[in-house]
Image 1 (tube, rainbow, N blue to C red):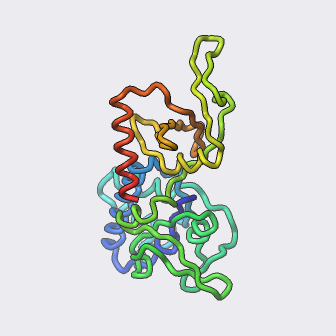
Image 2 (tube, rainbow, N blue to C red):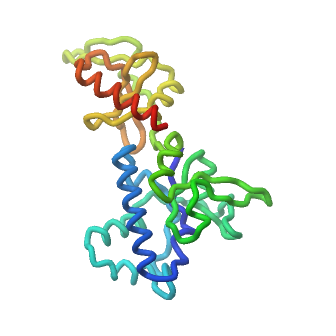
Image 3 (cartoon, one colour):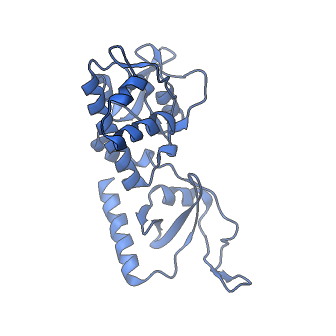
Length: 249
């Protein structure tokens, strides 16, 4: 699963104010993704554009950014343009309207979703039609919040890697630390992680009526363990959040 920005949607605005309005929506989407899935800009991949490329009419991105009066918005747009994960490939597998589509290709190849600015009606829908070897390919697309819920199962950028510290049974380390067990197979743990909800800055998932906690190891890599010592109130809140997420999905 992966998220990638649709670089083809970043050019073609008729007026500067249209571009700013579209970026307002994109910023809202990215902030919502962070709140909903704990996704950061580094989790979103992008074939970074040249800042001299035009965004609207003859206005370059460098010039456009300097016209943004709100300092926080200007900074966020620069982060989007420069600090997202970088798509390094030289050729794209998919085309959009005859043009190489690196973001669409990245999302398609990784069973993920791309995020588009609303420059053209082709990018308004939850799927974007692309071409691949003279055939049609559909790529999941986000251009408003409703699409986030539609594609929730393919958005989460979390990779489960077992931590050998957590074995099949609970045990005490030499320093007296109790180490919780992890009794799920790796593929099952990945599935539970994908469906996990955020609570108290940690991720919690459910499998066979047992709650599992997942913590970030590094970047988008997580390890997990079974939670046997949750307080009653914590367990109730976590189960409620998991239930609400299942209903939304």
